[in-house]
Image (cartoon, rainbow over all chains, first blue to last red; front, side, top):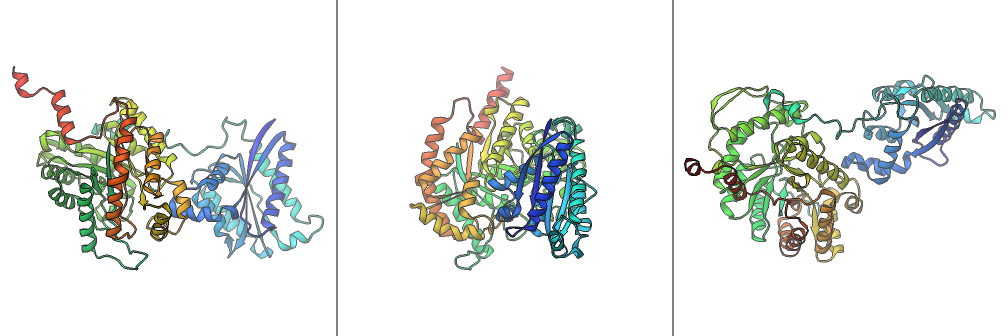
Amino acid sequence: MTTRTLAVVSAGLSTPSSTRLLADRLTTATVDALRQRGEDATVEHVELREHARGLADHLVTGFPAGELEAALDTVVGADGLIAVTPVFSASYSGLFKTFFDVLDPDALSGRPVLMGATAGTARHSLVLEHAMRPLFAYLRAVVVPTGVFAAAEDWADGDGGALLPRVQRAAGELADLIAGLGRAGDGRAARPADPFADFVPFDQLLGDQA
Amino acid sequence: MQFGIFTVSDITTDPTTGRTPSEAERIQAVLAIARKAEEVGLDVFALGEHHNPPFFSSSPTTTLAYVAAQTSTLQLSTATTLITTNDPVKIAEDYAMLQHLAGGRVDLTLGRGNTGPVYPWFGQDIRDGIPLAVENYALLRRLWDTEVVDWKGKYRTPLQGFTSTPRPLDGVAPFVWHGSIRSPQIAEQAAYYGDGFFANHIFWPPEHTKRMVEFYRGRFAHHGHGDADQAIVGLGGQVFMRKNSQDAVAEFRPYFDDAPVYGHGPSLEEFSRETPLTVGSPQQVIERTLVFRDYVGDYQRQLFLVDHAGLPLKTVLEQLDILGEEVVPVLRREFAARKPAHVPDAPTHAARVAARRAATPAPEEVRA
């Protein structure tokens, strides 16, 4: 049984937060779906609220300090990502965007991603498609077809209502992609290039100027 | 080992008074700082190059020539000469001229420059930064090392039978350092030529500097210039000192909080923890600086940034007194005691001329 790592980035601000609640639902369903496919999973949570100052500092200084660096490494090193944001002003929150702004642009290349969003009403649900999906497309992540949006009313349905089947469908899609990565280290999603391994030897760079 | 200061030549409002020095004042202040550096026994004064406000130093060789005339032992250098946007022919001419005027007390640090708009002002494109640095430096070397140059490249007009004048003093061109904050490719360039590598070592955590220097040292050995620990390494650093460390923190904090580049971000305490910035007593600066050697190995040059972010001239001169009286003598002694004999000293003109004479027999000897 292969053990996969699943990073869960959640940008909710309140406690308890419905964004985290949705992230937890998606995480549990994904871990279950992976088990059904014969795969184990370890889950690493990144609560962006805890990194709010670290993210602002990173914008100013150009480097991540201690805990933020660990959070970025968690996401870069994971086999799959669940990313959930509240909807602010017709898009993902600024905090959510900042995290992906400071991430190396190649870091998520080819990585399976499941996206989720929360808001007070269902009128914001297309934020998943007009804001989040393009962001992850730019990062060349592989986003599962089903994005999961939860409005306030979704939490009112005692039996999970319409939300639960969407969660399960999305989790199944993510699990399929992760399970399809092959064994750890063989042809899995590309990691960002190490600039120290990736330099051009100077004689080549000089060409006929040597 | 050489100790000195480097300045970026920023004209910044003093956040404690709201007063901004005029260009004229700031330029005179930097000259006073350079003179003071020699007076307190420092070895090196290095000046940046910028072509946009709030910086004044668009013409470092002019400034350094003036400093050369007012000093007698101070090594004059740059804290980046832009190898991308300057014509390499003009760099060859200007720095050879400065070398003659300063009696050989000149070296320079090449950098690409990271201000996008500067490139088009000089007819270039920041996306060509690396190829420009490669071609321009290859040409600069030829202009200094070869009397008559025929040359054709991509980024400037070709040269036919061109001789850059004056020729380098004693036939030995100024020593070149290559500076880069983030590009291993520039460390590779330094290693290829057996030149020095200068790590900014101010803005980012020490682990980053460690990796860059390690990489440069490995490539220096790969290109056959000696062992990895014989590569020529310089480090930046940033300090603010008072007798009592609480006084240093209290006095420096408003300048830190408002500083260009990293101000309005992390706290002074966080930034001091994450980067080599040391604000405290002279003893704290000594202890922290000695630790640099643990992660870059024995190195040749340590430059401190002491005059930015609107610090008044009087304060900067006091910092230089502390550096010269209490900090550098101890560092000089301690670093020397730790350095193995096979690790070279910082390059000087006299030593390089002697090395060249030793390597190539003088004409008389050839005839005999």
